[in-house]
Image (cartoon, rainbow, N blue to C red; front, top):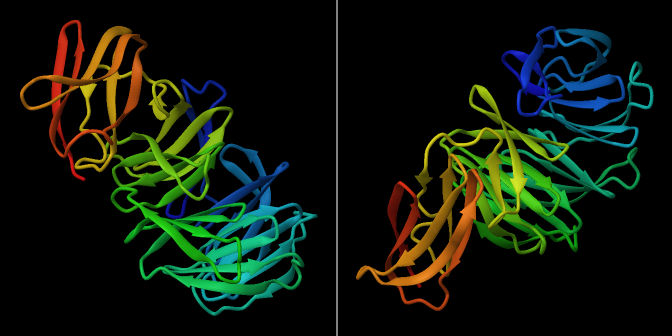
Length: 364
């Protein structure tokens, strides 16, 4: 299910992931901002209507069982156990008991009187954000949430994801921020990473963090949660605005379509579109210019013998990145240039019937 505040809740039949088809659009729910499934019920944050619960009888038919009004707009939602935490515009945090989805009951609140539009929970900690402020709340007692700290980014926060002791923040002005929550009363910035143009969506899948931006998706390895490393990317110029992971597939809301991918480990971690590419492509390395290492992505429309190599400007081969037969799909490989001098290098992809060369600049 994908929420579109202007159109409704879109449902998609993915019983055959390689052949998804639209199932319907629930238009009876006003301005849906976020939705969570709970058994046969849907819990929906619906803007100025508040928190709405109901059942999806058919892909296009939503049977409302309750409408719980808030003094502000309900914009963000997360559920832990039998409790829903609702981010409310100008209303802070609202805590709602949904043990009986037909009769939600508010049991707690944190009045911040500021715009709150995203929430996430891990253990006894809740993160709540407005456009530029990240707040940590103790929810060990959901009936009495306690504000522990605030962290000002001075940018524009689009999304958040929490793991144990680490917060990831997609900031449209500053990139991907990594904060330590080891002492939640005093969160501090560990590092800031380039996440492309206007990062706006985050999703943790296993040991990877997906970051959606205006130009596509970047994949960071978080085997060391405090030190994410770029492991792959799928930059096709489409805005990746939201992710859902299900049975090994990644569903991405992109402009007016839903992209469906697999997270693979071949060569290097990357997103592979489940529809094979139609032509050979060697993409510009990312980042470029780069310091120490860069990722090189290429498309193969069919299984082929591949030579992926790096050369200096005199044409001398300085590194062989991939050789041999590789299956059809999108692949990426990292070039670690830590022992090479600064300068311009050439990366060459050669297959039977196709050769392509791109420039890349190493800056130390």
